[in-house]
Length: 436
Ligand code: ADP
Ligand code: ZN
View (cartoon, rainbow, N blue to C red):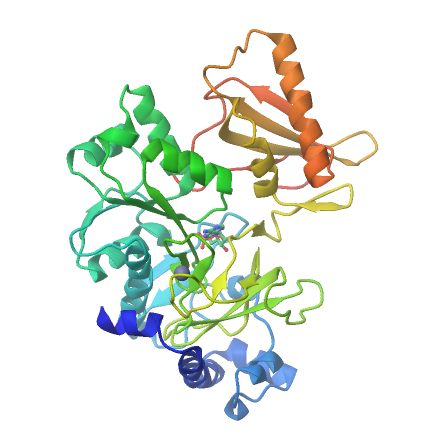
């Protein structure tokens, strides 16, 4: 614990030393044990034995999700399987799953990284950590679980689902920190309200460590109001570990990267060129000390930026901004790039609509993309008044046009018509023929 506190406040030069020493070993381990890396380093003319600065890493080739898929299931492992204690797989949101292996050391690191979220929430062994990310191959459940254990907190391993039971436990067992996707937290809050409870008063939550999917600031404020707690955004991905790669501190001004375990670069997704701090681009991650499945310059496809300057909390680890979305989720509507979370941010400025929405993409007769925002109204909205519905639809559409310069049709739907999710919410429905 004190070592973690120390490292979170270490001078940045010291963190860079740790990164360089770790990455020197990682690139050699990859080269010597993973045929894929040997081939790709050789092809790119990258000599892992000659790496002498963090900038040198820029000469290493990127690794993509497709590379990991091509080497399914174990071919990216840098240690013998006998040393691998646990295996996880990505949820496959965008296609075939990828596999991550963890040695004992990797599991320890994972717990320690997620525990930083509990530290950022001013937590301790006194906290009751309610984990309702799904347990199993998905990294959410066990990642949060190991974080809770690492902190010596009391962990309630609920997993996702059985929402009424979650609510009973939250109320009766006095959980103080909840870990799940933001959309599932919203579903729990809404269900509790429907059951006649006031979760702001009846639950005992202080903080929620929510992630695994993008959510807007307005969504966050809505959650914080309903549950009377503080929401911290946690980022991670199976390919590099799971949740805990970066977590927001109490200041909510960006997510501190666990820089002693991950080296981050931001690149221009089109040219691969490394961008300066402050500029938005694709996050690329390199493992500093992962043993079983290290990655060297993994292209996450997640869009963010390094926030320049230091955080008011005083910790020295650099921060990434909240993830806008994935490059694959980015919609290009008549030439304008838009992420669903930006649409959500505009939509949430209307108090009449709830947090539940879906974006449908279809094509019109001229084969141009047609984007429809399907949004649920709140229960107190008069859904019988056709005029009121049409007026609101037009207003939302007009505001989207002004804010994002995109033409989006808006279709309001009745409460509870959009499917609820216990894990990641399905925000985009692609109806274009031939595209799944
Ligand atoms: P899959 O790629 O199959 O969904 P994972 O379960 O490993 O697999 O999910 C990792 C991805 O989830 C990340 O690459 C990112 O796109 C998304 N994600 C994770 N945490 C966050 C977050 N806090 N904000 C936005 N997106 C997130
Ligand atoms: Zn901070």
